[in-house]
Length: 334
Image 1 (cartoon, rainbow, N blue to C red):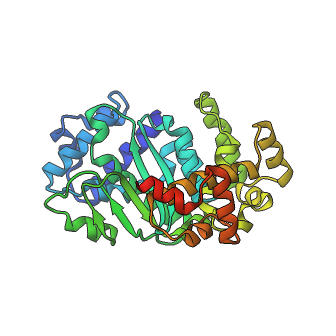
Image 2 (image 1 turned 180 degrees about the vertical axis):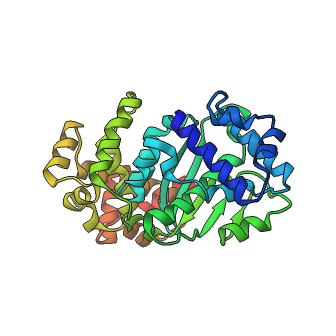
């Protein structure tokens, strides 16, 4: 944790220098002795870290300090955790590693992927029950960092389609639009980032299978309670690729996850499941959600779930629920 702390501290210092802010005076204004912070005598907790950013915003009249700071964050500063993210094969695996090993960051937050007709949603959730856990700085810093790091991981810029924040619109809301270059919604139900669907299939240029497995073993030593279930990795992949039946085959999934076909099959058998079982479970879960909670045409839902024909979807839905999609939707609406 000392390496992680020192990496973030050095980022804050370089950020202040780039903004031409007097570094020691900036930290002193927030009540911290920079020398003591540098030598690790007084490490910053997450609460103190965001408090320091608050003071920076006030002292230098820079309300977007957190959004700007995200561009300075690098995976190397986050030790083993950052390495796991950077060496992942794709965004799907990177988000899985984020959720599995977030205790290494000593913060109570999570990310989850959801795919719909608009694209891919990265939804932020705080599990921190303290007031600081609801601070708007958490998602703002996370989203700006994700976009900056995503550009490095993919080797090209990522332009979000939309951004949502739970907090109300501030007086300087127009600066959010300028920063993210997309529509911004405030006072939303979730903090979320909408990305184009194609980013899910783009491999990370920073991927390294051998080093990733080495870091994974190290992370599991540091977080012995965080087991990595293969079924979870496969399920997350299937959630994103349901629309493409060929991508949901065992060979394609094994290649995506960096395993052989036989190894993946054996690992799933050890966890008492298979690709087909997981595919059936996820299709059923998504079908019930899309039929009951949206007004999408059933033919479109059938395509989204990877069925070759609408009749195949109808037959499966009848097996799952005992009703046709039409009757089920009508009953749910009623």
